[in-house]
Image (tube, rainbow, N blue to C red; front, top):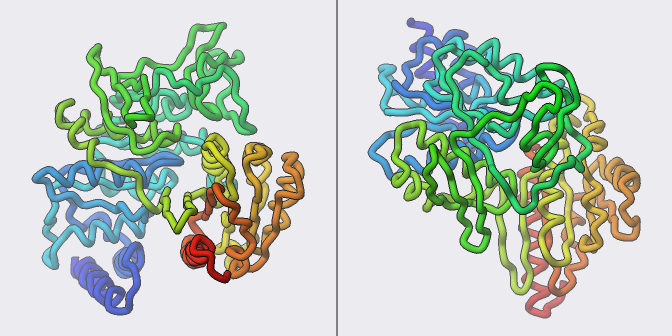
Length: 459
């Protein structure tokens, strides 16, 4: 235990040092703690209740929504809402949750958990409830296939953990079949189809009899309502089912055990409709009444690091996260932007900057991503950037995008000047997780150019 306390105190001192030098303390203190004491997670005290959120996409958004919803309660909530969700990040957050004597100072932990980190985390703590928002394809280099991740979770999940699962995702539904579970989902949306139009569809065959599945309703990729015409297998009944999404009022009805109530939507994208239904289901399973949940949801908003809109004079800049190497998440973003009314310019900064330093960037994900959405003629200019911009140009040509609308910009400093900034055209800036800092600088330069052009000054 002496080794543990040395690790605890050293990691706490590292937080102070990082703050004094103007750095964020997201996972470095945890790295220090685990280096000094590999069993740090075993010995560090934890809150009596732990809620986990995992899945391929939406973890950070749901974690922030739950944490913000609980802010109005009397609970002291420990959360890694910044998104550091692997072993070092979890070690950091548990370290912050104890005093120098290793006594927990929080009532509850709400933890975003990387789905591949289950083998190195769950031996040390057992979530009371775990959300599985979805399991879809991610980076080819770390997530071979969603069924591979489902197998990891099934093998590592504590048997006592209750699961709150997206019932419209049959891969997520397959996880840990012996664990207690409830399902959430969406009954119907105006945009529902009966055919997948995306390049990726990882649930085509019945898991019971291996016949071809039929989709009754498709939301995106393999997410929707399905049945097997051969053996009768179908999507599970959802305890929490969303319907009647009203985008004027930004509300959705939730039907639960035959009773219906309405909760606020944080955004009108399908991804975020699921995030809102998911958050509702989790709060109810945590023991809050429907009336309390409606009130808690009413104050929530989308995380600005995921979607942010800024005005500069007569122009609008929308910045959105589109994860590097994640074909499905980027497809969702492109689909959503394509569905927005009006003319658009789009800047794609989904460049895997860490890979260019540490390894060789794998670009095969570009051919799983639905860049075909950019054929929409509302996109008056598509700016591709960075060292891989010509790879993007090639992919866009395969997608059938008019070459006259594509602009390759190697240097980030030249992006703002490459925009057309036509009157009435919105600008979308897409950055990946690796290019956040670079995108911050580009955003500031674009807003400055927008202001100057609005004022009629020299650019």
